[in-house]
Length: 473
Image 1 (cartoon, rainbow, N blue to C red):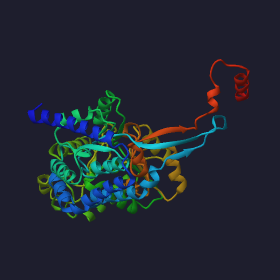
Image 2: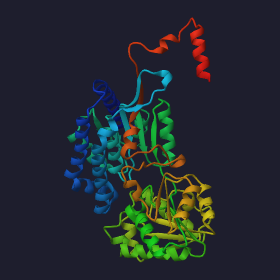
Image 3: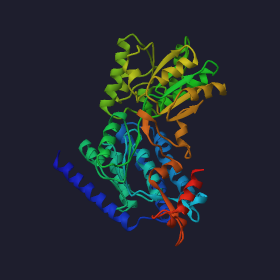
Image 4: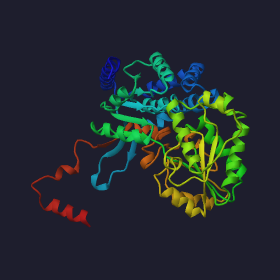
């Protein structure tokens, strides 16, 4: 560990101590204060659109401006404003009924802020996936420390600078640094730790948090399938799947990871998706609207997966493109793969890139069995004109979220909880669910000076014996 990393680790420990002290001094931020915090987030976004887009573009070497605006900035603005709009209702104590044998009295649930939140953000949407959890934490009245990914340093440094302009460090702080700093961050005694990233690292984060009994929310990934049924127009399915898969070049946790198509029609849907890709990007290698792969390491991994599949006899379909330009720009052209061996890495690992295997299924139950035999995916998509078919897929599978005849956009609906299950995640957020993540449901039973329970004390006599018999009836 370098001296710089050691200093950064000591600094973040000091910030955590300051934030905990500040929280103890101001445990209940008012509705007005919380709404003001959320307004700062929205203003930060609106006032720095160009800087945010430029930083993300620098980290990726090429990220479509439109993808950064809609996938990162607008998303956070909408989230902050939706939270502010509904915060008064969410903050209200919830009255619950009191059984007659415990009357008189009133019972209610307070939603108290848990304290200081730790937020670990990934590289694929480096701004949105740091700021959206922050919106939830600030709405709940918490303080927060954010650890951005070291793979997107320009965005991390910009967020550190911007957050420092809008918030005091004892309320919100950004901690930059490499893996050693990140590991130390997950070992801190936060009041809640929120992690977005890979399942592999998520296991390590959960283990580190468990040492301090820190509750965690894990937003992970997984292989999200798209089932296309025989009754659904393949051209329409291809347009939807192609858009979702190629947004941010497939570097999206809920992007379709593979397609299940009716047996014998795999090539038909594969060609239709390639035609969509060609229409969207005339030449992926030279198109500024087609995002690059974030790092050399990830680019090499994706290329290796393609070449392993090719060597195993799979058919590799790609639209026309300048291969040398694509390589120089660190771009993987849109790729659809057919005839994959069952043990292919493309079928075993989350792809996280613009590569889409297409598999055939005999009947709908075969397709759902294939999905259910594997880890629960973060998302599942089904394309069908038959509502009963859609319900059958839902009944026979389990996933974090579902899109019927659409993909990706379920996560943009503020009142839908977003999160996985099992290997694809633990816990959910967005909207009121996000507010609840950083809140403690605190039970309160309030009585007057005297209560009948005072009678339930030794020495027990006939009166208590009679009450006991009555209760047992």
